[in-house]
Length: 304
Image 1: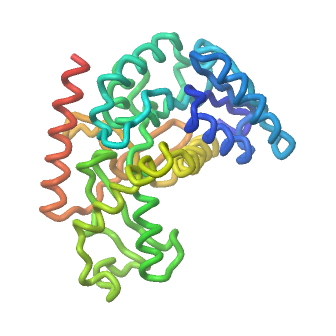
Image 2: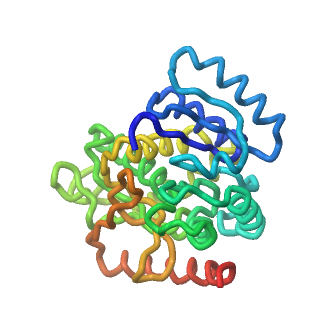
């Protein structure tokens, strides 16, 4: 794909604008096209972002949905805002209509485009986007539990006193209330995570709730989350553009469960290259299956 890649960001709210800024300073795409149904917001964001253009050769401008459909990577952030007491799954009714409208407005979509879903509930919307876009499943990806896994690694790294990238641990399943931590496969330097004295007596349920609940806490305090997801998305775009083939926990269609949820995958210029089979104990497998069943029931309701 390379440095000449064009990236579209659909949705010019706080998340879309922050992603655009992260992409701008990353300097790996030639152009960023910002799209929203409210043109004044796009104009304002582009004017503001262009003030940071002196640190980057990447050009940023407003554009149409049709132009977005011809970009190499299309990031969809457009969606209804999550309320403080609202679960991600409760957002589906409102965000389905928005996603349907966005995808129809972009058609025909470039056949080699990578569609990256960020709007919530991301797993369900990724499944719907796979059906509506007409693109191969490996090219329609959700940000999934990438941010949750980053939060997990940061918390573990702080507890043990190592660098964040030394921690190999994943949050899997739904990006939401039923997500699981794959404790049985987590390690640092080849040593199982739960063998570390600092974590031997850990309350795993409480720990998991702190990770899954961090977004709710941020929303309660400031109304929205956008810095973390912008960092994650810019990292994913870099991985795709440069064909880095990093392993990331992302929303993808899992044949075994017949739905979209997060598992570790290899990400490159063609989208998802393959899924990595990760070791899970019997309890983790049962929780993952339970999460998948609930997600599939919702997906089947919206996509026949």
